[in-house]
Amino acid sequence: MLVSLVVALVVSSIITQVAVFSTTIYLHRTATHKALSLNPAIEWLFKFALWITTGILTKEWVAVHRKHHAFTDEEGDPHSPALEGFWRVQLGNVFYYLRELRNSDVIDRYARDIKDGWWDRYVFCRGLLGLTIGTVALCFVLGLWWGLLAAGVHAVMYVFVLSSSINGLCHHVGYRNFDNTATNIRFVALLTGGEGLHNNHHGYPRSPKFSFRASEIDPAWPVIKLLIALRLARPYKTIEEVAA
Image (cartoon, rainbow, N blue to C red):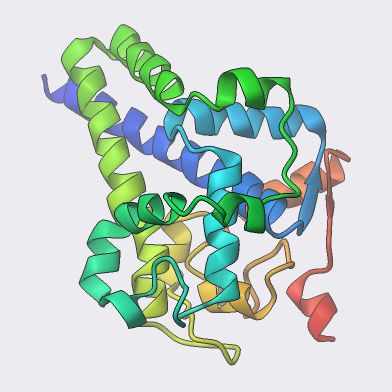
């Protein structure tokens, strides 16, 4: 039983990091801010990974996040702890996300440039189906109860801990390199593919690299550099290039 528990937790951690890296590289840096352009095959792989691990729709995520940048910590921000209170956002960020999507014009206003291909229209738009397939696959590999445990731990960590910490903790505590209301937290960055370097990101949203100081680590950046070296991605200017 102990071995099965350890295996389930390790698998859950791997799945969570797959979701985290897919979110930061594809959803955030590529789709939302155009800091990268990806080879279509690589883009498809990231979309597929998100479909079976999170059920997130690209247009919805992009629209909510772009609105966050348009009204950062001001009236109109979908999930600001300065407006809603820290604990409300830290523990309930997903509910603010879903609330924002009830606004009928948010996608048309903030994600009109996101085009839907065949997979988006007929497969990836069915987020619940993706999550079901992902969960069934876990149960097939690990067994019913261990698979459900792995899926549950992943869901809690991704939705209620890691993702919410970017909009909660990283707008509440931490240090700043640039003059904006977001903050950097190095430990959070290590767990979120670099997303915890949130002040840097708000300072230079189109940089594909989130780290700025030598002491800051952006775990997604080596992956992005590898994709660039393999000519599977093309970057916009990094923070250093823009700030020079």
